[in-house]
Amino acid sequence: MRKIALRLAYDGTDFVGSQWQTNGRSVQGELESAWTQLTQEQQRVVLAGRTDAGVHAQGQVAHVVTATRHAPATIRRALNALLPHDAAVLDAWEVSDAFHARYSARWRKYRYLVDASGQVPLPLLRSCVLHVGYELDTEAVQRALDRLIGEHDFAAFASVQGYDGPTVRCCYQAGCEIVTWFDRPLLAIDMVANGFLRHMVRTIVGTMLLVGQHRLSSDTMGQILESRDRRRAGPTAPAHGLMLLAVGYPAEVVSPEMQEVLGKDNHENLFTESL
Amino acid sequence: MRKIALRLAYDGTDFVGSQWQTNGRSVQGELESAWTQLTQEQQRVVLAGRTDAGVHAQGQVAHVVTATRHAPATIRRALNALLPHDAAVLDAWEVSDAFHARYSARWRKYRYLVDASGQVPLPLLRSCVLHVGYELDTEAVQRALDRLIGEHDFAAFASVQGYDGPTVRCCYQAGCEIVTWFDRPLLAIDMVANGFLRHMVRTIVGTMLLVGQHRLSSDTMGQILESRDRRRAGPTAPAHGLMLLAVGYPAEVVSPEMQEVLGKDNHENLFTESL
Image (cartoon, rainbow over all chains, first blue to last red):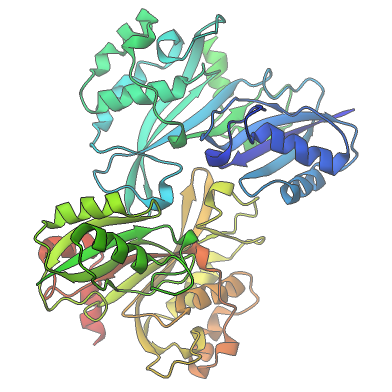
């Protein structure tokens, strides 16, 4: 049997989420269905990161174990011909048996887009940008994000109901910058961590929206983290502003070519330093 | 009676075009319907530029004559509450009777987005970026665009069937640059002219795709223009990559505040120079 890794992009709008669910279309379900059409095999597709309904991806990673002899480029082309128009395989590689899309991942990078321009929301961006009716102090947001970098217990910033696993994660990067869509300025909030708790990015963004309005001080981030109390953080921001941008793996399980595509930011070094 | 000018944005995907047609939803039809709900008046909405089905706008201009006493900001908010989710009024101003959205316009600016990255098309951009399966020589494209600047007969670059009006237009700017959507590079082809013939931007873009592949030399642009023969130019590029970005008006018919929003590029000077 061979193992194939896939890099995926999808428009999350019409998916119930990345993982298979009984109540609608999932990215996993569409991939498994396309895989079966291509190979006649019934294989499980394993995704690196779980994304909620409405969350997009431009760098999700998956793997599948297979007996098929098709070359990775053939698999990519064939899956794209079989997949619906809101999901695509950007790249495909053969990987060693040691590679596991979820368990081998060392970091994930997310970006959240907010339109706080004070202008009317743009129809074309309605499914991928959160529009808010106020302006944001981006310097205050950056100061608050700075406080999240490093190893922390993120229980205060996550939906931990029904979850009793570890809530400590290591955040390698947290920053914001202004990007533009034609002439419209958008605030991009970026986070890189070794892992994210459920709703963690969206709750951090919801908290940053309070900080950016000066309804919460940047200096309180430390207290909120230490409290481990979800009620101290802001509301969970809507899903549709969020995009999973990249997942990174150590050199032991991926080829240099694959690592070049997946991890140009080289968070691997940051990871090593943080240990 | 008062005259109200509107700046519009829309996602052209599900419209049959900007102008009222018998066979489906138009931007004009939706605006007129919202206007009637707001004011109980049956007024004609006049648009600055005609856009085809699938073409987007983030700066289309319209005007409407009305007896309503609502302030422009109230009109903007009320129309946005009444309009469908794929159309929006970005700004509204009261203008003098001398203003006419179409006839007073001095220049229009369009941008066309092409994904020639050689990568798989991104699902999230499927309705607003043309994906092509080859790379483009952007320097050759820029040289060809340079040749279009100035006053020319653009008959070769337009659908002139059933049209016997003038085909001379003045092109003030024609350029291309690389923009990025997350980590994906896109080629943006921009054009500013005093007016555009039907399908003119799309035919110029279709021709640039040939130039960018070296299937047509940049040096032939002059010959194609001079030929006035539509068969000499390239195919008409698909509608969905095109966006109407801005429409500019002379200071005589708009306030300084309105001109600031509509025309930061100040093509007005270019226009004066070209006369």
